[in-house]
Image (cartoon, rainbow, N blue to C red; front, side, top):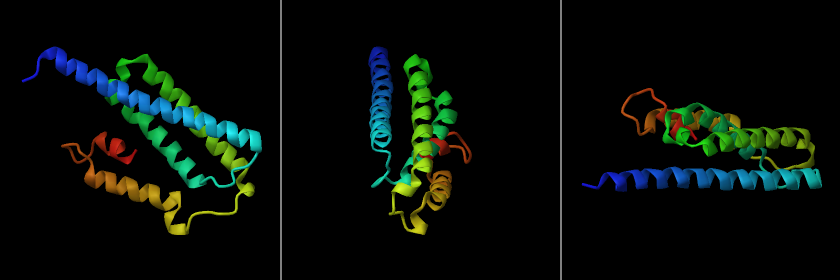
Length: 140
């Protein structure tokens, strides 16, 4: 068995790595916002991907309260900022939709893939209960 301090160190490292990943994603969203704002175009950008990220952030707003991430104030700040960034990206994609000509085939659009991913998350989530927050974690 591990010493108690080793378990707490591992838990702190897991929280740190999750937050680091989310912060890197937020920084990338900010760069993308800047690029879209500067060039006033979403040419080459997948609108479905941005909507998928928004759905994932909204799901995180729900399940994040059931994790160890709530132990840090940085997680709340990152989640709020990521939500704003995802909403802003979707808004810009909606406003500049006319600047792109390529879209996914209909069966791979977000209105098909998001419900399929949610159904698969219900079936394959790691929780012990049939219905649990783990479904949203798997969905994101």
